[in-house]
Length: 213
Image (cartoon, rainbow, N blue to C red; front, top):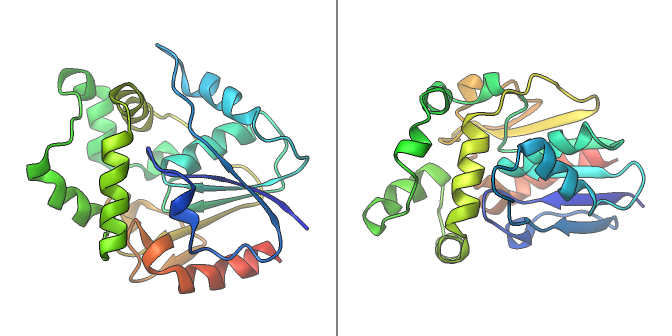
């Protein structure tokens, strides 16, 4: 039996992993912490790593959770890292995000979700079902502005070039958040979007089963 720790995407929780099949492995879900003022991503990852109590675990990181998983792997020994709809280095982050970070646009124009742009956000996320829509709406209601501002700043300013050993990258060919053209993935779900772990779970589980063997 393997020890698996899952880190969800931006502002999300363990429900996004509800359709994944982890076989009979021991699975824990690492909850997001409230960031401390001016906290670096390295310091934040160190606090998150304290929740990983088993030796040589497998980390599964979704989107921003994948970025945190890589940062945690710099601190503790990891057996495997599985990225889903995420990025390994800053080179895989879209150019517009990197430019936004360089120009500090997130400080000038802090992100706030308005109902008028939610359909665009849903499209970019690859939302397809009412269940997914309601889940995302709940995440929007519950995420704090402090966490949101901090997380966005970390994503667009991430400078990582370190790629851990035993990393497996699963990505969707139709991902609008992190477009596949920038990604060097090990496994591609051709019709998968950013939310494919829910609406392409059968295909994702087939890949996951092979990695977890």
